[in-house]
Structure formats: C-alpha cells, structure tokens
Length: 275
Length: 312
Ligand SMILES: Cc1ncc(C[n+]2csc(CCOP(=O)(O)OP(=O)(O)O)c2C)c(N)n1
Ligand SMILES: [Mg+2]
Image 1 (cartoon, chains in turn blue, brown):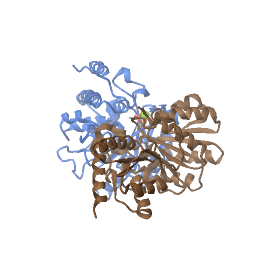
Image 2 (cartoon, rainbow over the protein chains, first blue to last red):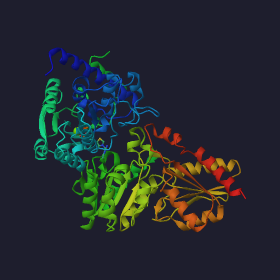
Image 3 (spheres, rainbow over the protein chains, first blue to last red):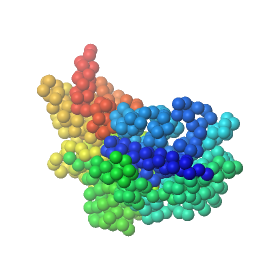
Image 4 (cartoon, chains in turn green, blue):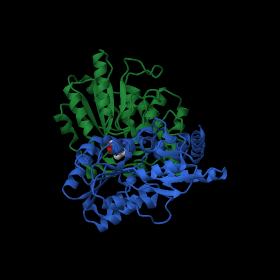
C-alpha cells in the first residue's frame, strides 16, 4: 500500500518517464510508442518502489531481476534505468543509433541494468523462470519480474514457460501482462484471440490477479500480494491503454511501431505539462 | 527504387486473382511484409496466425497437404529461426508445396537492431534438403521470382528486404529457378553476388574499369540449387571470384560458391559479407558501410583477389 506522498512521487516519476520516452523515440525517428506507454506505470512501480536493486552495482547478487519479454518496449525500460541512475539521462538521445549501448531491443551485453536479451517475442518468460530457479538454488531472496504483451502470449513458448514455472513452483517469479488489447495488425481479439487469460493461467497452476494497469496503488498492492504468495508463480493481468498518457496515441494500433513526429511530440509534451 | 517486399505484396494479389488455390499466412506483420494487400482483397484466403510462427508454418504444411498453395510471411529471423524445425519437419521433409517468403532479411532492417537482423537464414535454409533458396536483387526480379515459385511444386524459402533498392533488372526478365544471370562481361575476375549486393557489384565494376580491371558480374537470384555451370565457367574464364551477400560469409552464397569451386575448379575467392558477427542498431546505410557491404569494399576485395591470382 502506498501512502499519499508515495503516490504523488510515483505519479510525477511516471510523468517524467513518459516525457523522456517520447523525446527519445522522436530523436530516434523509429521505435515503439504505444506499448512503451501502456507498460510505463507498471514499470514505474517496479523500478521506483517494489524492486530491490542498486544502480551503482548492477551486478549485486541479491538484486531483483526484471525481464522485458515484450522487448520492443525498450524505450520505457531505458527511461527507468536512466532515471534510476544506471547511466546518464543524456544517453537516451542515442537510442537506436549506430554504436549506442541503447539498442532497438534490450541487450544484456550492452546496457547496464538489462538482465537478458529479448526482442523476439515469447522468449522472456522462459528466461525469467531460469533466473528465478537460479536465485532459489543459491538461496537468495531475489525475485524475478517479467513483463509480457497480450499479443506476445500467442507464442506457444509462453505456455511452455507457464507450465514449467508452475511445475517448479517458482513463487519468486511474478509476471505482469500488459493487457492493452492491441497488437500490430489490430485488436488481439480479432487477430488471434487469447482470452480468457486469467482462467488459462489459473488452470496452469498460477496465482492470478487483475488490476487497473494505470493505478499505481493497485499495482503496488498486487506486487505485494504476489510477494506474499507461496508455492506458485503469480501473474498480474494489468488492464492498460496502448499509448496511455497521450490522448491522440491512445487505443490506436497504428502507433504501435511509429515514433512521435516533431509536431506530435510538442503536442504530447504540452499535454504532459512539460514545457 | 522499390523494396522487394513491395513487389512481393503486389504480385501476390495478382496471383490471388489468377489462382484460387493460393492462400496466404502471416504472423501479425502483414503491414510490414505487405501481405495485407492480399488480405484486403481475399480475406477468406488469408490467415493471420497471430504472433505464433511455429504454428503458422505447421498450418501452412497442412494447407499444402490439403491441396492449397500457401505463401507464408514474417520477418526472416522469425521464419528461419522460430519456425525452423516446423519448416524442416512439416514441410521440407515431406517436400510440401509451401512458399516461405521472409521479409526484412539482413542488416538493412536497421534500427530494430541485431535481434531482428537475420545474418544466417540463407545458411540455415540452404542446409535443409529439398529446399529451394532464393534471394532476388530488386523489385522486378522479385515479381518474376514470386511467379516462378508459384508455378514450381515444392518448398521454397525466398528472402526479401525492408529497404528500397535500386533496379538491376530494368528489362522484364523471366525468373528461372536455379539459373543465374551474367549482367556484365569481364575477364579479370568475377563478382558472384546475390540480393542487394548485385547493384553494388555493378557499381564496383564501373570503378574497377577506370583502373583497367575488367570485372564480370554474375547475379545468383537462386542460392540453391546453385548455378554450378555459371560459377565454374566464371572460375575458368576469369580465374578469380569475389562473392558478396548481405549475410554471414559462413554458409550462404560465399560458402556455396567456395564449395563448388574447391571441388570443380579451384581459384582464389574473396568473400564479402558479415564476418561471423551479429548486426546492431543503425540506419540501413550506416550498417552497410560499417560492415563493408559497399562498392568501395568490393573494389578492394577485387584488387586483393586479382593479386592472389597473379601470385606464382
Ligand atoms: C517472435 C516475434 N514475432 C514477431 C515480432 C514482431 N512484433 C514486434 S511487436 C509485435 C506485436 C506485439 O504485440 P503485444 O505483445 O500486444 O505488445 P504491445 O501491445 O504491448 O506493444 C510484433 C508482432 C517479434 N518481435 N517477435
Ligand atoms: Mg498488446
């Protein structure tokens, strides 16, 4: 449960992160806007409230791990890492440039704070299960968090990982599902239906929670609930809006892989109260 | 200048009108692969598999076994990687009539970075028995190749690109699977190239001519079956080869050409391509320059191979 001050601080943090995500995408002239914005509130609560990590020591053995399975939302992750202090904010301007440590998709060999390589959808949850198993083997309190897309869970590997996580009872694993209802070719329901999601994961043996993915307090409560759950992995289904925070990007599949133009950026920043 | 994927999308619609057996599958990338054009005109014959490439290739195999002619598209990394074993087992092993048309091949994918740049797909697909492997140079050749594979009975992997490429085949030329084309005569060495590197080789040959080196240019739109006669003829007549591809130097065109000349008529070969490394983020142009896939690099490789040939 967050107190009022924490909610205020995290709300302001999320606002700043949105500003940086939009600026970085605009500077890169390519990249994924919609899915970065829908995931941003969950990432804010993870990186600035829930997770135990030390930006001055990214390899701290007892840290919590974060896996961005929907790797195309890299701008949201990079903004969090920069704000947390893993690298200078200025680096964000180099997103997707030749030679930058900020690749189009997360690269653990290039970016401090990035735990695994993702970008090919469907592979992150398996890696997260592996990280959780390693922490358990080593007797560490470290928890692993993994962010999935609702289109991404069409990949069969997700369900193989879901089966393994429950089978091994990795209760130090918490997956979050960014349920924004859209993928590239349109509505998830029309492209390839994945619902009902909760009952599917329940049947696989997971602890399942559903929250408003833009309610910081609700997200924090669900993360605490997940941490208290023993014997099974937890899935938090986060109901979100693709493009959240910028009205003219919201609910639009067409802004999945399109960055804000100069004009859109200035209108978006104005909306976010950033001059 | 058009992208080969645009030529594919347009030709697919024409095929759809001509042949009701043609069906198309995609994995949530129909706007990028250009199969959306087909989907719009023939919604009944278009299947979006969602983000589930392995299942898509399996369904395509079943559709082919049931008598349809499936064209299956996604990015080259996902087609050749995520769905590899489905391609091997469900479609190549039984020699089913499925056409895998993979777009966004190579490093010209650009900003998405190394995770999305296939530098090994030609090698992987070439190693699979029964597969035909194509890599057209430009829009017109792609259009002709799509028609040729539709008429061919059996599994095919065709690699196309994301970015716009210059036209090499200005005159309408029929595409014959397994046959290369000599685009420029020459006596001192031969560029053997595929995909977008053919245009670079033609430019390099111009530069070399000014310096008195007479370079032949042989384009291989088919990587497998390789046009062995044309390659060996080039080896015999020019005594030195430079291969060039937007791919690893291991196992693709360079590998295939070396195998053939080593057995049939050994001559010095220089391979231009990625030297066993993954790609990274950058613009397509920047990356081509960074990895040495330019006319300038081809000129240097040609000079090296000519020196090797002159060594006693
Ligand atoms: C294996 C694989 N197939 C296809 C893609 C291309 N791709 C990138 S994002 C995306 C759509 C993702 O939709 P979703 O998971 O719902 O993400 P979000 O809406 O949160 O952006 C696709 C198909 C990919 N990155 N990996
Ligand atoms: Mg989605």
